[in-house]
Length: 180
Picture 1 (cartoon, rainbow, N blue to C red):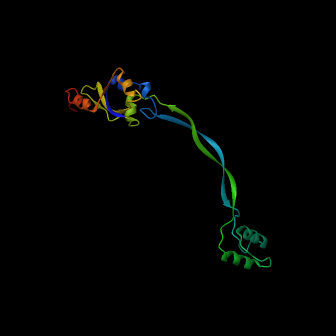
Picture 2: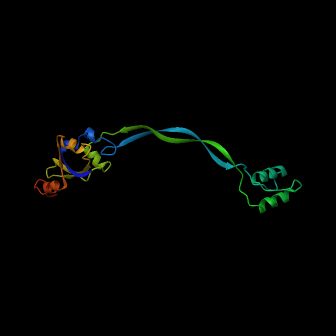
Picture 3: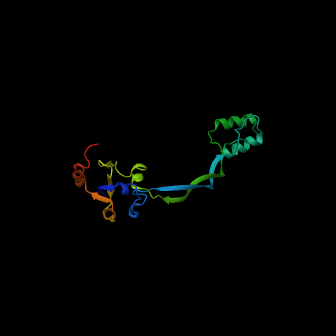
């Protein structure tokens, strides 16, 4: 990439980009439409919707303790079972649950066809424009790749003059550009 300064006529500034520059990573951009897609996944959830207490049956408390790997005696009372459960470190029993959810995914991708002006202002892909005194030409900074022929394609476009940094500085010194 090389810093290039482009002088565009007002008509070119307001016209569509050359095809060579209409890629989303250059001066254009993509716009997307989305659609909702229902998906299925699994997650771990608590097996029980309660924690054992005196209002649960002895069998419910034992089932919970079995899932927690907490030892007990079949002759233990509810109070003894609950005490053993409280004294023994354990985690809450979990089970795998399948669930559905909706996700927005890209449905269509559309490469936009902006003007030079839209490229500069809508997405800031060009340097700030500087107009000459009579507003017939605009100068903007842009990085153009040389290797893939983009710079040559721009240079060959009517209404566009490509300048190096030093050439742009000399151009801006001319009376046509001075003053605000």
